[in-house]
Length: 361
Image (cartoon, rainbow, N blue to C red; front, top):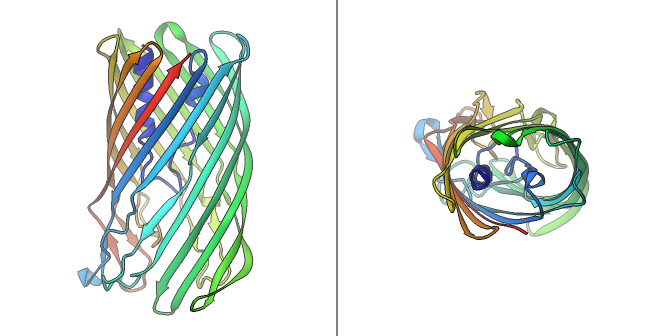
């Protein structure tokens, strides 16, 4: 049932959603550590959001403020011995993109912002026996970005230089290989960042200002799978992240915080995979993240989502697998903060596609 498991992993890969809670993009999974033997993978995801809204009862339209983006990852796993396993995982776990195009007449026209990240995680796993194991290791994430907010009071234009935060992951797993059962719980610590910040103080004139400091949240991932019939597997995940602890206050921004969250995020996924032949498997999954209501940030005008994913894995040669998946996301409606204009973002969506090449050797 090996390639059935791979399809499930690829569907989780395509959860790189433009609408995930907080700044989440990859879910910070560590699935590579559970692969058999020596293993290497490379993955690519692309997200194409369509997010637009209107203000003052439809008098002003924002146009599509979503920005297409890609997410690249990779992993290398090897066995030190029968009990000790090690994996190196690289991904882009956090990010944000928004662009209020010019010429729309919308009050925020010309505003745009971006956050990018890169992460490296080293995970060690110790197997007490074929059923019980623990895993742990350090994680380092670097982040950088910019924010330009155009309003009736002026333009705020800041650049946040790259900053790195270091934390750790720790967890445990229970397995029953005879029925492809695995339940894994993984905790990721919060990370602290301090960005050297440059602010536009006059047209075309930029100057350094006090650093922008914040933390990204601690999180907990529960991943599970189990065979339910011959060549058929059920899989899923639950991810909680404490985004209410993240508040970004930037020097010179009127009405700080620049970014904050009223609710933590909880994301669910559930799917079924089936092996149709020795060389091909397919899977389908659904995802859900609750909409909390209230007022959303203008730099993240969404609230919750529901999604449907399909994918397949083809074994090209011994140990070499090619997996692809596509995900359609129904983006939750949101009301954003813009005074009496009460902007509403409704009927929005995103499409995500993912591709992974893996090799066992």
